[in-house]
Image (cartoon, rainbow, N blue to C red):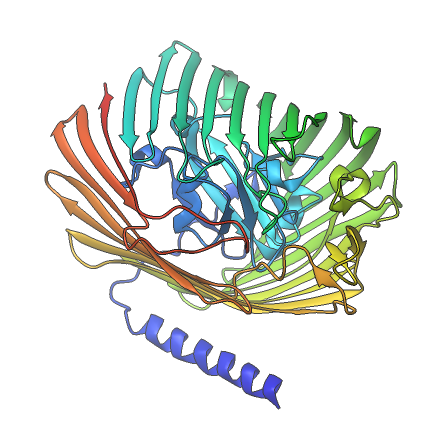
Length: 596
């Protein structure tokens, strides 16, 4: 009976939302263009944000710029993206695929390092959040979805210099220069950040540098090369041992090389690509104990993708990929695994009303059986303003090296873990007109063999195990409205209900997903600068929710410079994104930006 009532509520909500959406109709406008990534079309709803430097809120890290999108950011430190886990539609932190220009960069050791982004906010053009069915286009790990960081190509000379300081002796400086010389574009960026922390053992230092080189080729082609480096040192109080009171410390270094070609010849697109990522991690569980874990992991992936307009078959693509992941560790040992993959995709228009999309991928993993994944999606246009979309996909995730082999005084891995597998289903309605857009998506995810750290009683160590089956159901809705020339509203709400077959085990991190996640952003476009006020409400199962208020104020001194003042958690709310790990209270930061 409870399930029937719940389904009835969702149906009524969907009808009310659709009617409310259509009531805003004014002049006819075309639907928003499909988001194109890797020359593939997302027929379901995706979300994106422009580069951080265009935001009224002067976020230091590109990761922080995701806070206004429907992403559950599970932070462990004060700003600056020192350690952040990503969750989409109730997924664990391991189940979100991170992409750089459509190429997978997930850390094979642990998803905790997926937020170690090797570039500054000046290097980002757009961040795309691709939840659910569409994410199957990109391979393993996209259980809840994918987040794509799209880099900006240098187009003209630009120099940016920014610095800021805040309480807790927090500060950062950033410098970036880019230029275009004939067919060659170059960009160099560097930033440095540090803080004494809001409590003991939460201090940090972070250094990031990035170099991009782009060469324009005939027929619209481009040769792109990106090189990134990031180094961090930070106090990691109870980062991986909630409520244990361990003063821990971590030191990391991350390298990235990405090179890709985009060639066009008589309507045939050819895209060879190579990406390599190396991550060093040294971790001390207790600062009072002379005991360190040192790890080095590598992942590299050469690939090639072809795409051709094939008449009635639409835009057909085929890709080949080889990947290898390896780790050398004092704790996890030395391990190597690789895979080969072939994938196909197709997008076509079927008459004036239907857009269709298909994908299929076959992976041959060295440590596991061959696995096939794929998706089917469709969009039906009722009118120029309104469309329905549908999607089904099969997704998978391999266990991380930490889940397989890690051990310490509280935790032990499990080398017998198998692959996680899911089915994603979703259906949605979207509406777009000038100055207004909205959408509603219902989703269902059926999970099999999910991995978590569990134990039967408090006397046992936490161990990674596969579970039999989970079901995740919910909906997400988004609304954007330009109220007038001065004020605009951007709002998102996600409801997630996760039914877990825990088989009587205790969870190390608990059911740490957002049951309710609301973000509302008011932007004010005054002549002297853009101002923003945003509210975020988050509630996790069996825990009280919390409301955060952030404010970003800007004053343009002239067209090339501005002063800014940011405040996060203005209401000074006490909360824990991850149970047992306290988060900072009210924070102020003031700075100056010069751009010419």
